[in-house]
Each structure stands twice: as structure tokens, then as C-alpha cells.
Amino acid sequence: MLNRKDILSTIEMIDQQHLDIRTITMGISLYDCCDGSVKRACDKITDKISHYAEKLVSTGEAIEIEYGIPIVNKRISVSPIAVIAAASDSPDYVPFAAALDKAAKNCGVNFIGGFSALVQKGMTKADEKLIRSIPEALASTDLVCASVNVGSTKAGINMDAVALMGQIVKETAALTKDRDGLGCAKLVVFCNAVEDNPFMAGAFHGTGEAERVINVGVSGPGVVHHALQAVKGAPLDVVAETVKKTAFRVTRMGQLVAMEASRRLDTPFGIVDLSLAPTPAVGDSVARILEEMGLEVCGTHGTTAALALLNDAVKKGGIMASSSVGGLSGAFIPVSEDEGMIAAAVQGTLTIDKLEALTCVCSVGLDMIAVPGNTPAETVAAIIADEAAIGMVNSKTTAVRLLPVPGKKVGDRIELGGLLGSAPVMPVHAESSSDFVLRGGHIPAPVHSLRN
Image 1 (tube, rainbow, N blue to C red):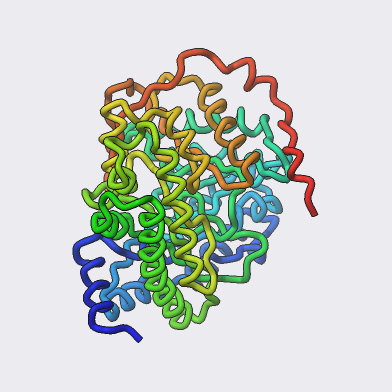
Image 2: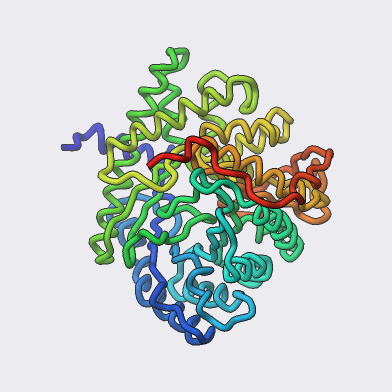
């Protein structure tokens, strides 16, 4: 039973510490929308999504009002479009992105994910069509998000796909340069992509999922930061225990919302993803949590150890609070979306190399990082390869969202607005990786992948 103290504490977390449900995401299978005619396939996609998710936003808003819990985003994820579009006669897959965008606008959601291809072991013709369609698809739509999985622990890394994605990221930035490369903020390159991720831009409805499902993403960096202020100077095991207890309370709230949304929408409950996803708002930063542990500035020596503690404690607290914790669950470090990360990057303490080290111990990877517009496509691809290697060897999900905005140079700033925030343009190494990337081929799976 909740007592008066618990209720007042939850109200304080919501009112003063930026606690919210970051997203309710409905995953929808589109396999029955396959059709040889691109028009018929697109019509089926729009109709199915519009029907299944027609009450998603109104249901989220009703729960928000009744329980007093902010629900920031309502989103949709769908089956990887490369698979659905393979049966069609379309020369490119931009019409499928338009169909997704239309359906998302019909439903009133914030984003729709699933303009995706899984190419960790090789590319089909449909996969390559989708990948080459990404720049125009993201430039010509408002709500569509794309993702490509280029590697996995079981399959290794598809370096041909990595090289291609370096070009695609650059083309996407060029086509959306008038919006500071916004298209790149809607494009994620994965290793070990998960099938039940409710967070954008990497969400898609996996092949092993049900016809439709409700996944909820919870976030609470401000709550964790506030909790740690009560244990200043305490040993790190006390810090870990405090984070665990806080994560438990946050996840319980997410479980409540997920079950209620599932019931009202008559849709199976999937998972709660407890990821500490920051926002540009002051007091809602993962970087400030790490600094509260005793670091002068995020990015200095000790940051990796502090983040490892945080990520593990979040997971331990979350799995005790929900019948099904999944997705990514941990701590996100998107530079443009975290005011503490932005400050550390401007100061020069937080570099891309340090961020890469941090991705060894946290959720996801090099996220929402602005780099100079003249960064070669091969350098972008090499950064993707490095991050994929970390994911492959460590059997974890890693990802890259880079924004090489044309005309921007180190010291400039990009402005994306809303939850996407703003970011300083960070330097990359000038030395070339071109010969390495252009070798192509496949990086074999590590020896520890041979497990059954």
C-alpha cells in the first residue's frame, strides 16, 4: 500500500524533478500489408496504422489527466519497412515513408519509427533500396524515423553497409541543412538493435513481436540527481543503492501507466524501458548526475566508472519493479539533449573519444553529436564502425546519430528545438580512415558469439 509520504514524494518528483513518462509507443506489425503494387501496399499501411493507433493519443492524454503523470510523447513503431516493401514494384521506398508520415499525422503522434533495414550479415535488394531512400525520405517527411542495423555479436559487422551509411548520413545532412541537419536526428545506425525499443529514432516493431503491443519508456534523470544530493560524500556502494531504490520507484510508475494504456487500448503490454533519457531542461541531465557523484565536469577522468555504476544500478532497480523490463534500459548520453553534456562539450572536457569510451558501459552510443560539415563520409563510416565494434564485442546495443551539417565548423552551434535541443559542433580527427573503410567486406563475429 502507498502511504501519504509515498504519494507526496511522487508528486514532488513530477512537479519539481522532471519525472515523466517519456513515451507510450504502440508497435504494429505490417506483414499483412505486403503487396506487389506500391500504391496498394501504402494504402494498406496507412489504413492499418490509422485504425490501430487512432485512440493512442487520446488514451495517453486521458491517463495523463487522471493520474497526474506527464506523458511527453505518443509514438508508433512498425515492422522494418525494407521487409514490407520488398514485395512491391517500387523503384525506391520514399512512397512508404510518405505513407508512414500520413498515418502518423492521422493519429496525432509525435514520431513513427520503422523505416528500417537489418543488414548485419548482408543486404538484400530491398534493404539497399530502403537505405538509399533514407535521405529523401527523411527530408520530405516530418515524423518518420529511420534506422539501420549494420552489425551484431552473432553476425559481425557488415562493412559494406557501414561505408554506405557514411554516405547516407552525409546526404541526409545536406538535404536538411536548412534545418541544421534535422534529418540526421531521425536516423540511427545500430549494432545489436533490439526489437522492443520504444525510444526514437531507433524504434521498430521486431519480427518476434505480436500483432500489436504497448511499450512504455520512462525517464527520470532529475529524480536520480535529487536523490543523490541526500547522500553527498557517502561511499559509492551507498550511491548505487540510492540509485537502485529511485529507479524502482520510477519504474513502478511506468508499469502502472503501461498496464493502464494496455487495458484501455485492448493491446498487449510489452515492456517498460527504464532509460534515463535527458532533456535540454536544467535539472534533467545525466551529466549532472555524474557530477553529483564527485566529478568536477562530466568527461573528466572517472566519468566512465561513474556512468558504469549509474547504468547498472538503474537496471537493477528497474527489473525488480516491473514484470517486463526491456528495450534498452539504462542511461542515455545524447549530447544535444542534455544541458550538462552540452556544457562539458563546450568546455572541451567531453570529447568524441571520451563519449566513445562511455558507450562501453551505458545504453546506446554516440548520440546526437554535431560534427563539422566537411567531415568526410569515410570518417563518419569509421566512427560508425568503431561504435559497432564496441557493441559486437561486448554483446550490447550501440548506435550512432551524427549530424555533419554543411557549413558548420568546430565552435558553431546547431539548433534543433524541442527535446532534440542544441549542440556545439565537436571536432573529429583529421587523419583519414578512408583506406580502411573502403576495403569493405565483413568483420567476423567474435569468438564468444559461438554459443548455443
